Image (cartoon, rainbow, N blue to C red; front, side):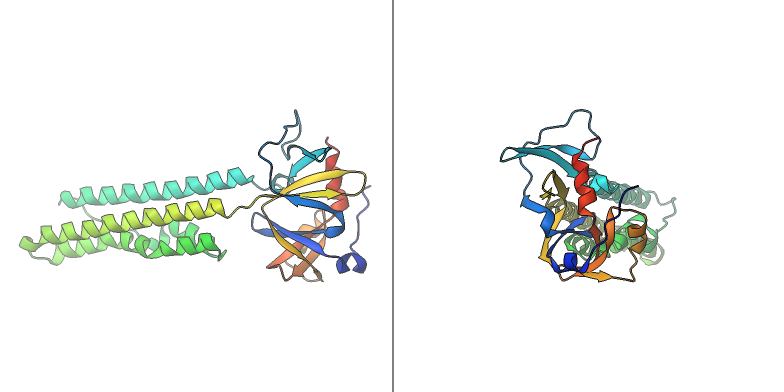
Length: 277
């Protein structure tokens, strides 16, 4: 049976390195850290190895495996997450373009009824609300799209009002004006989402943390290193279920490096990943 390591007060008094993965925070005790580096241009693949191994590192003659911590904790890889975000953005852009094109065709056909879709019930709004909750640069970029998105959805109502209430000699001119405004809002909406997509890709700062327990070495790929500092254990935490369900974690802590609760990793168990299956 695997012995579960318990974090002691002496461990807590040592500095801890805090890093992020998929928006969550983790920490490793500094006594196991052998160095921090940016990913090299080339990493030697490991034939027939499990997916969580990116390849082999050669650092000053020491050769050891590099572990993708996202895959280790059953998260999507960075490339998978970026691709999924890009796909979602492109789908929302194309969907709103198609809807606006249909609206323009409807205007030219006076026998077709015009129906508006509540912007708050649009699938985009539900997605954007989740993104903005992170309160990062990506969320700030998405927040800029709220006004043009709302304006796009209200174009149908404005057209209906013109058709019902405007005098015949002014109707065509007013409809052209509203559709031109809609085109502008669609361009703005598209540009902002593309800006968010670019910001999303740039927010990742992949870093390799090299670990050692004296006999074994392991490199781990993380999203971003937040810094080194002290950690205070948390007794009552929303993340305790994660801790109890995996012996890879020793507890939950707090640090001045992030407002998030930090999952404290069992470094000794993690370093055993250097024994490639």
